[in-house]
Length: 458
Image (cartoon, rainbow, N blue to C red; front, side, top):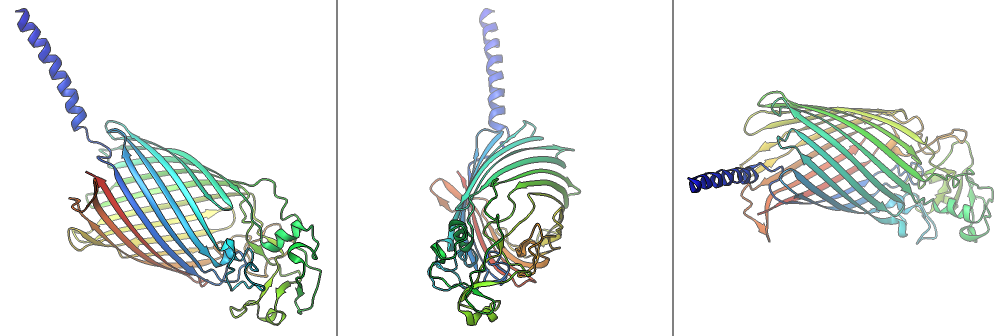
């Protein structure tokens, strides 16, 4: 009897452990295996309203951005995501921080060959998420770091999402903080004016003739005083985001979201020149080209800045948006997006986007898309030579101007659920390629090429 009782107890204990092991084995994981995404994009643009040269000049720019994203399942409930990227760009506009570097005469229409023509931006973001056993509660946290030659950013945040109604409904909230710091770089003539304490016969200015509007040599140029006296070089951003999504039927899903964003600190860009319409103009270069200064045919005269961009030290933004996706049939789906945005600088904008995924085969899907955007101008914006020196704030950055834009896109996606193609222990899950053509009514145009590869570990 004793032996039988012992066997029953052992059987019960063994059965309990077997059930626990079974639960551990068959519990659905948030992420089944390690995933690696390699993304890269190439961006090129051109236009005639460069902000570094006061709202006129070449906006030619190219940018190449490779990004690596690794998602690691730490357990059945936890995922760690590491996102690292590098952006290498070449800009005609930023090169004209010093338009005379590598040339005896500069022009807003000609890129300088100096060191400011190229730069590299690098970023690292680490995210963590934890899901409850029933997968109805998801907690997340993230930290980030980014750096380029004149700017450093540190960020952190967290969020919570709740699913209910048999996971047909989801609400979420996220908060993020970015603590950024300028390492200010000024246009060459302003920096030289600061270094020589206004002496136009020393340093950079030594041996250089400064010309007035009539082409005559003059020593009367001086920028607005105090451009270099900003002590607080911080730019801080705080955001609180809310989202709500609902499965409406077997074919339809919608989502609503809105953000509250507060920024404070040095929100202007010290690299961006401003020219006033109520003060005299002064130049360096070929006097004969002054009359033709605003034309792209000007290759050899450059106007000295009156000041740098000045903007308020706070900004409050509110974007509100919605998404609606609809499964039409086995071949075609519809994805739509709309956002309304406003801030206390006077900008109001509308964004509308539509994408129509078309499934060609079991592995290939096409993605034609269209995006429309328009906005009003910020209260402080005026084009080249239309700001006035008596204003407290001013900018000629066309990103803050009134404009509308159209973007046409096309993409193709390849999916292999069996991951037949392999690199070491990783199988290729899908490849995505997208192209977008972007045009503003101000003349700016851009082309964007992007390709992404997703690999999963066997």
